[in-house]
Image (tube, rainbow, N blue to C red; front, side):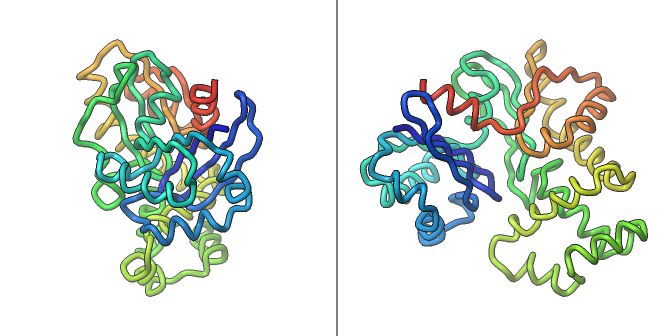
Length: 280
C-alpha cells in the first residue's frame, strides 16, 4: 500500500491507496517539523486508528509538509515518521513541491499556495525554483488563513470591526485582548490558533468587511509573491493551490483580474492529484 500526506501547519491529510484505489483516509494536526517536536507528532499518529491499523502494511509514504523546505528538516521528519511506520520507505518534501506536482505533474508552470500558509514559485517540471519567499507566519504568509486570522484579531482588538461583525466574533470566539495575546505570545503553536479563525471568514464571507480583508490579503500576496514571479517567468500557466484559494475562489479571481492575471486552475485539495500521481 501507498500513503500520501499533504500537511499545512493546521492539518495533515492522509490518503492510503492499494493498486491506485483509496482504501483509507484521515486528518490529523499538522506535522510541520519547524513547529512540532517528535513527541507531538508521534502522539498525534497514535491517536489515529486508521494509521495504527495500516502502519505495517504501508510500504511507501510520500509526505509534503510545510516547514520541510530544507534537507535537514525533511530528514528530521522522515526519521520521526519511521519510528511509527517501521516497514515503510518514506519520502519527505515541502508542501510547495507537493503543490507543484499536484498542479503541473511533469509540466512547467507558476504555482501559488494559499492555505494555512502561503508561497509561490516557478516549477520547471522537476523542482520548484528556489526563491526568498516562504518566510513563515511571522515574516510572511500574506493572504493565508494565518494572515487573515492576524488581520481579524488586530481589527477586533483595536475596535475596528463593524458592530455586527464585532458582536458575532465575540459570541463565537469568547475572546478578549488578554486571552488573545496570551494564546499568541505564551501558548504553544500560535500559528494554529491564528489559522483557526478561517471558519469565521467562511461563515461571514458575504460581509463587506470580511470581503475587504480577504481582498487585501490576496492583493498583498499577488504584489509580494506572484507578480515578481510572473515577471521573472512570463508566459507560464498560473495555478493556485490550497484551502483559502479554493474556498474564496470568487474573491481570488476578482483580485487577479485587477492585476490582469489569468489563473489557469484553482485546486482546493491537492492531495487527490498527488494520490493519483504517486499511486499509479
